[in-house]
Each structure stands twice: as C-alpha cells, then as structure tokens.
Image (cartoon, rainbow over all chains, first blue to last red; front, side):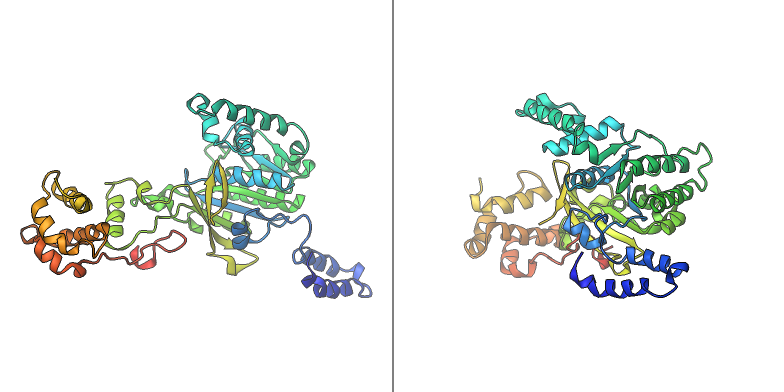
Length: 327
Length: 90
C-alpha cells in the first residue's frame, strides 16, 4: 500500500466514524468503493511490466476476457501467465477445455524446466542432443507440482466443456482452494447442445457472478468470429475488435476488461513492403513471411475502470513457451 | 563470371530475368564508377528499384549509373512500433 493513498484512507476512515453510519447502506457502499481504490494484498498483477502497464491489476470480482483468433497464442498466453503467477505466489485455478488436464500440467512442467512444450507434446526427446536431460528436468518439474508450494498454488479442473452450471461449480471449487485467479481456456467450448443461442451470454453472466460471489478474478479466453478474417489472409493476425467476440455484446457487457492478442508485422517499408503485403493478400506467399517470429502483441480492447488504457499495446517475446517483455 | 562486388547486383537482376541473364561485362563497365563510392548492397537495392520501374526495352545500365540517386528505395514505414499497419497503408 503506497503513501499516496494515505489521504484517501483518512477521508474514508472519517466517513466510517459518521454518527449513525453503521445502520445505513451508505457505509457498505463506501466500503465496496474503498476496496476498489486502495491497493490490497489480494490484487493480482501481471508479472510482465508491459502487461501491467496496459491493464493495471486484476481486481477481485472482475471478469476479464482475452480474445484472439485460433492459433494466435491464447493457450500459450494462458500457460505462461499461470507459470509466472504460481512462481510469484498467486493461487490459480485452471479449467483447460482445450487440453486434457495432464496436458496442461505437462506444458507447465516444461515451462518450469525451461523446455519447449512442443518437444514434450511431440515426444521428440530423441531428436535433440540434450533431449534426455530435458526429459528428466520436465519429470522433476512434474513431481514438484505434487508438492507444496506448487500444489498449494495451482489447481487444474478436468472439465472439457462449459456451461453456466459448470462455471458456478468449478468456481466454487476454485474458491475453496483459495484461488485468486480462475481461468477458463477457453469459454467457447460450450455444453449447450444445439441450443447455442445466448449460451455465450449465459456463460459471461456466470463468469461475472462467480467472480463477484467468490471475490476472485475470472479470466476467460475467447474465440473471435471466423468471419472477421474472411477474405484477407492477414486479418486473422490483427488485433481483435470487441464486436468480433463470440457471443459479442453480452460478453463485452459482462467483462470488466477485454484484452486482444495479435501477431505483429515485420517492419515493412516502401515499395518492397507493399509488394510483400500484396503477395500475401493474393495468397502468393505465406503470412508468416511478413510476421515477426516468436512475438505476440497484446492490446487492451476494453477497460471499464480505466478507459484511457483502451488501445494501449504491449509486445511479448516467446522463450521456450514463456512470454517475456520485449526489451 | 562476375566480380564479387557485382554479386548482389547479379542476384537482383537474375531474380527478375532468370539465371545466367546478368550482363557481366556491361555491368562491370557501367557500374564501376559506383563501386567504392557506394556499398555493394546499396547499388543492388537501387538497381532493384530501377529494374522494377523501367520498361524492359528501356533498361540501360549506363543510364542507371548516371541517374543512380534517382533510384533510391522508398523507405516509408508501413508498420508502427507495435507491429501494426499504419492507417493509410490498410
């Protein structure tokens, strides 16, 4: 808690002391407002300075969404954030609908061991000179997940589809575990049969309700409509817009913060650059020819608390599955 | 066989007109005044602009050498520091 909040605290403490205040709703309202202006130990921050700069802290009671086209890096982003939070002592609960629960744990063990998760996923140990050493490191990291402090800080729940009931049930388990952050990767693996109409909205409301009931931050990974990328092969790599979220308006309304992931372009210049862009758009060369390799862009698409952060961007580089601020 | 200082120019030429088409003798003669004054890769970049903007029948290495600075590559940035297309490029 910084000294700059001392004046605010003094004013609010004085309000607590108002005669008759305890019998009115007023102190509750003010108390709730205080909880959101004075930094508290349970506020979670990104370990990346770049991400913290563009979003600020994750507050209890908030629903955050991280949106991107498939294949841009949602799961990489999720696992890297979880790895960093657990190392920093933040309690996290993950529902990895995209992965089996053991796949998520294996990937996290790779991050802890400094090994590319892709090598473990493809079982390519024998194709690398140090492969067997890496395998032993990952095995050690996996064993450590079963012991404190790791086991006290990460819970992985094996749900493969989500609906409002699953969100409520999983969030209650996460709350019992003491999770500060509850992550669903991703929120579009819907369990609503053919009745998908409005399902995204129900899930968004359930996520927001769970965040408020259990005073934790719910982070949901979100798909972008495929229509958003139709026609232009580069469009899927660009930053998503709010209306492109699956479940659009209701998702956006319930979320306190929406972040978008994108793949930044190489520093193209002049006629040569225009020629390359034209070639990609004519399907003559692959989009990867004009994209920065191993770099992920993050943009704040919506920020209910701090509007000036909307549009702010940060670049992260990929290092063996871990995302780090680009220096 | 071209001199090594012409290798970049030969690559630029042959990437447009095909392997073995680079006129080594002419190039050696007409581009010689540029050699030493400009880096080999700079000569090649200017040559690329000249070749792209000049109709094939009018290509003349002597003319290119005498108007060398006219063929400065366009270095207008198309992408900002965050890796996004600058608005007027979209």
